[in-house]
Amino acid sequence: MEKIYIEENQKKKMSARLTASVGLSFAVAFVAIVSILFISMSGTTYSLPNVDTLPATITTLSPADNPNIRLKPTDSTGAGDFAVEPYVATVGSGTKPVYCVESAIMYSAATLKRGQKISDEGFIYLLTKIETLNIDSSKLTTTGSLTADQAKSYVKSWLGQTAIWMYLGSTGAANSKTVAGDSTQVYVSTRKSEMYNIKNMQVTDFGLDPKGTITAATSFYKDSGMNTILDKAILSHNSGNVLNVSVSGNGNKFTYANDRLKSDKITVKIGTSGLISDFSDNYTIKLGNAPKGTQVYGINASGKEELIKDLDNVSYSKYQQLYLYVPAKEVKGKVDFTLSVQANFEVYTGYYYEPTSGTAQRVTTVDKFSHAKVAGMPFNITKAPDTGTDASSIMYIIGMVVLLSGLGILYVNIKNQKQYQQ
Image 1 (cartoon, rainbow, N blue to C red):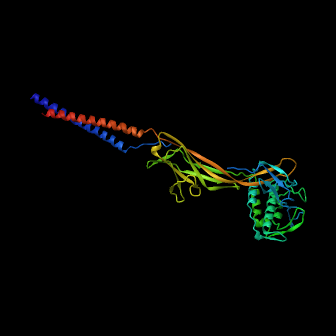
Image 2 (spheres, rainbow, N blue to C red; image 1 turned 90 degrees about the horizontal axis):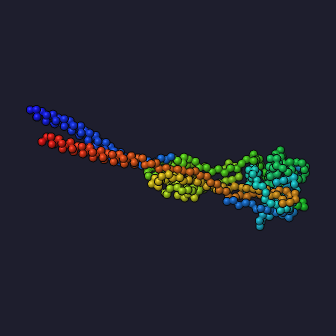
Image 3 (cartoon, rainbow, N blue to C red; image 1 turned 60 degrees about the vertical axis):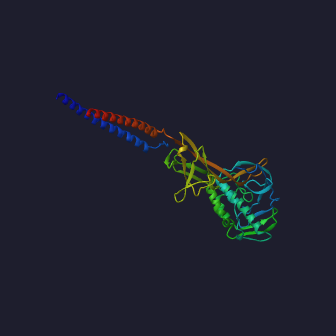
């Protein structure tokens, strides 16, 4: 009896140990299964943190030689006020109108060298408007031998030169006094109302032999809009012309989307703060050291993203906001690259031409040149240590070891149980 009791007691203890072992085995197996499932749900993680210039010298021609014309308003209050001889200079192989910038110094033929660049935007603006001024011949009436084309040319010359003298006098420039009449008279803004109402002009040769008259419909200044141009130029005196190109965004912020890394929104701004330049609608995008397959998308007017295929001709009016898409597989470690934007501007530039010797007056001329300006921003993508993958691998190995161990324990306990039952 005692032997039977001892055997039964041992069987109960073994059964309890077996029950605990089986429970432990299933617990271990559960941990292993969770570890394996963790692997299947884990993914890779990232820490996302053209300018030509005006010639060096020009040679002014005597008004008696070219064009041998004198323009004198007949409704001006001063005897010689606002009389003009159109000035011309040889520039390269041709001739070009030039304008006197020192009304107190008598004009003469001379060789002049290119001197200081004009920095006053108001003056450059005035010169550009004179350069492109189009006179409406239908508002002009002529007498004598004058043709319509001659009248247009003479009125433009007179408007340009008198407006320059008025501007320089109004802004306090040196040597801005009349040559004829009252030699102390300065072309100041108080005479603008008189200037703006002049509508009759006598045209003579340099020897004062009459060629005819020109009469404006309202006045030479008002019919051409030169009064508005001059007022605006004076208000812009000494203001700065700034060419603006900027690129902004968070160059370290990327999000994962369909095997690609998408940048933060990039904003492009192009413009001018002044009056003397324009920019082309097209700009150029360049990617420096970007991962292979990187693409640029623009946000259109409806807010949708569109792939920009031609990065050399991007429409600014259409695409002012961009995104970059970088293939995730091309990011290996840390990647640094740049995006740059080049905008092309047309800018009017002028120089003073000064005498190489003697006391000849200074003159100026202006022309339009191409300027390119570039702005950009850096981008940085760092592939984080593959902690997700590493953790998954470790969990997988541990899970498999624990699972196999648990199965082994289960097998041994079942085997021992059978032996006790025999």
